[in-house]
Structures are given as C-alpha cells and as structure tokens.
Amino acid sequence: MSTTPVRRGEPVTTVLTWQVRPGHEEQFEEWTRGITQCARQFPGNEGVSWLHPEDGHRYHAVLRWSDPRRLTAWLDSPERAHWHRRIRDIATEVSSERQSTTGMETWFSLPGTTVQSPPRWKMVLTTFLGAYPFTFLVQWLITPRTTDWPLSLRAAVFPLILLPVLTYLVMPRLSRLLRQWLYRPVDH
Image 1 (spheres, helix red, strand yellow):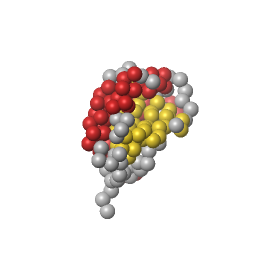
Image 2: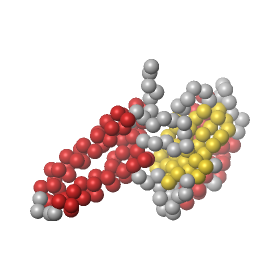
Image 3: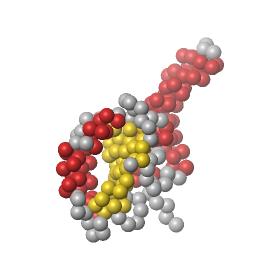
Image 4: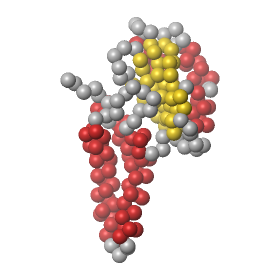
C-alpha cells in the first residue's frame, strides 16, 4: 500500500484497484453494488465511485471518508471482510493508495489510478458552471456593500467566500454529477 501522510481529522480518499478474473465481470459488478451500499451506510463515508477505465479486467474504487479514523474502521470492519470473502475466487485487490484530500486537487484528480485527468477544457467548463452562480451572487449581494473598504480587503472577500463554497460544497457534487462526461474516453 502506498500512502501519503494524512493529518488527523482531514478528509481522506482511498483508491482500491481490483483485478477481476476473465468471465467474472458481471458477478464483480453485482458485488460492487452490494459493497458500495454497505460502505455508504458506514459512519463517515462521503461517497464511493467505481471506474472501469481500461480495456481488460481492472476496476478502481474511489472511497471518500470524513477522516482517517473512520476510514480505518471501515477497512477493518467485519462487514467489509464479509464482502471480500464473497469474491475471493473472482477478483483480487492488487493495490491501494490513501491520500489526504483537502483542496482543489480533489475536484478532478483520482489518486492512485491510471485514469487520466479530464481534458482541461472539461475542467474549465465544469469549474465555470460551479463558480458562475456564486460569483454572480457575491457581485450582486456583497460587492456593493464593500465599496468603502480598502482594495486589499475587498479583493479578499471574493476568494474567502468562493473557494470554500466550491471546494466543500459545489465541486464535489458537480464533479460526481458529471463524472461520466468528465472521464469519458476521447473518441478518435
């Protein structure tokens, strides 16, 4: 397991890579639905995404947790062990990586996978879709009330409001909603 140091109390993402034996893909995909439902009911789970980005038999699970302690509780849980026993003969977990994910890098990156980042134009468009409504609201509701403030303070208001809203509320939901479009392979 490759790990990036994670500070206590920070959100954490784990990427698990599975090698599925040929001919067992349908069984594995059914299993992914069950273990995903189980993980989502576990305290601290903030989402599970499955990717099958390559030709062949490799799948990636991206699990997001509120903090390292709750992730460890899931990884060591009897529930998870039960689900893993169910696929012992059809798939093998071949790698995992745990990373702290607290900033803008979590908007689009999938740590530890061979999945390419979306094309830059898709990231720009998605970020625009997330930022524009809040930029409009800040300009409409807040900027007129700060005209007497010093320029350096007025300039600080915008990023102080926009960046946390985007990082913690808007972009995780928007990138999840648009995931299939963002990571769709480019047709040549």
